[in-house]
Image (cartoon, rainbow, N blue to C red; front, side, top):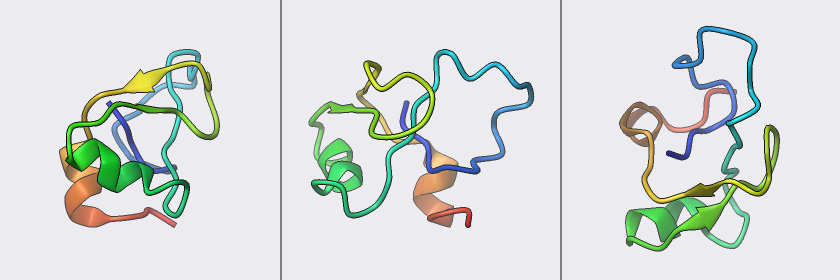
Length: 64
């Protein structure tokens, strides 16, 4: 699942299985919304693949 940086769902410091999608990077967020998987583009583990968007991030937008 893709999140924007700063998403409040993470309640511990282990980010080994997390990566973030950032706006403006090859329309990654929009691609996920259209059912296309996207690799994490920053933070955590860049080899992770997201297939869905965090619903909280989707409604809220970026957290910064």
